[in-house]
Image 1: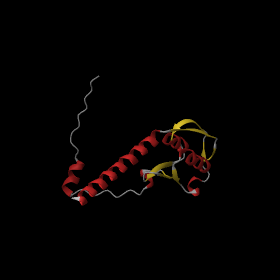
Image 2: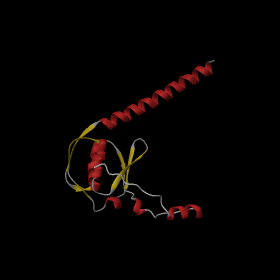
Image 3: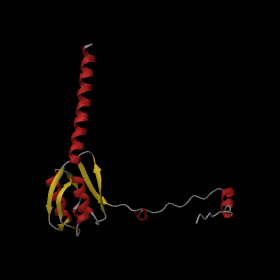
Image 4: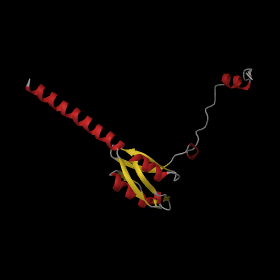
Length: 140
């Protein structure tokens, strides 16, 4: 009986901790910050952004080398500010866990090698050569 009560108490505390962490994460996402960053290297802007917002941000210097961030001014959420800093750079945000943000290059479909198309079985291939009649309706 005592072990059951202890198990129930531990489960209740664990669930309570989970809800508290979820709530604090949601509150942090809605929180706004006052930003006043000049036009400067993206690296410097990301470091100042991290200090002001309290976000853990992961990026490599070679990834952002040569990129310039425009001035960032105003009261913004952490997400809005980061999107403005990265606008036009070809870089995107990837969430790495609950508290860390990773900056990486944007992936384009054209950048990845195309897979060869599978050949249809012979019966289907013949059907593709003779497409069904099409009808065009005009309602003008």
